[in-house]
Length: 447
Image (cartoon, rainbow, N blue to C red; front, side, top):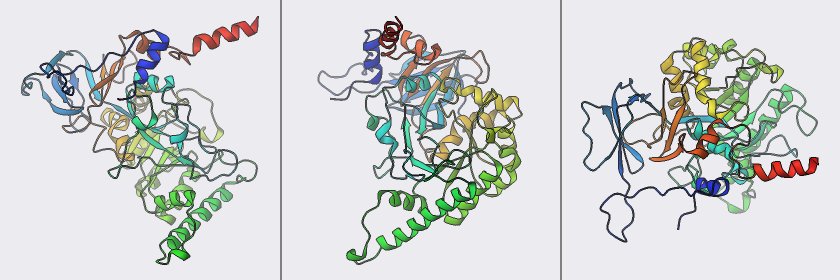
């Protein structure tokens, strides 16, 4: 028996409602396993990202994947499909957030500055309302990261925002069945504090070099044909060896231009695969980043404040990098920026000169490439997962709302549903089944 969905659990608590079951196809024999319906969404403006927009199109979903996509006047509707008229609406691929902290995730502690053995798998609450708020923003695929207060704070995890009750049911997996994810690293001011943490930028880089050199030596010794000469298993060094062998991508928090160049220097020294995150000063070193063929995942902040090393961040970052030839994605860093407003990040970049098609790609397919998931998500193409977002207007208009979010052919957000609407428009903690009693307890204490 499958686990009850997260939505069912939370609605039972908040509204006393159960999540309706996914309908089985008509004509199914009694006792037979339910068969998925074929759904045809017709009349919407389709933005595939991998190709030009289709002004009045048809998107056909079968068994959780995209079966057809094309102009409405030249694409046949498969017999037996459930047809839904969505004329006047816009359909985008599900948004890909390459850097977020949903689910109250935690990573390394204060015991050491480099902790590759830490797995965020063990610290994500998939019943936390932050996941539903991300769905309300049209986000379907995420890279959940531990915090940035370390040179290396743990292993990240790639998830689909399915409505499920356990973390394993949200995890994306590699062909060998292992969990898909990368490694979170950082430099700059975040990792500089009292010992055993480094106090300077130079010491930060030196500590990283030492650990990767140790990982190289560990890999050499573990390959010894004599089992007696092999060192004991080391979970942390194993992960660093994965990075050296490019089995794991390093997602590197970095802001200042000199810190960006330090990351690229270390990448070249050890042959690592790195995605640069935040890169507030990217516009200062865009050509250097382009020559290094390093992809960048940007955060777009629309208000002043934050850390001193991010003071020179510009909305023009995205356009400067694109013009230099860099692959660019956006991320929320939720809760630094709200997942429900992810489309706005790209809109602000467009306002600062970034081309619309590149901004849409930065929300979807570019992020998928940075996670190595471009074969499954990031665009509306036949054979890819049926992850998509239904909007009521232009993606970059401040007036546009996310109406529905679908993951693998199942609706996970519907703005017309009272609980989903609360997640879409409520403040911090909205939709949490624990909010009312907590508030009541606080009021009681105040008396």
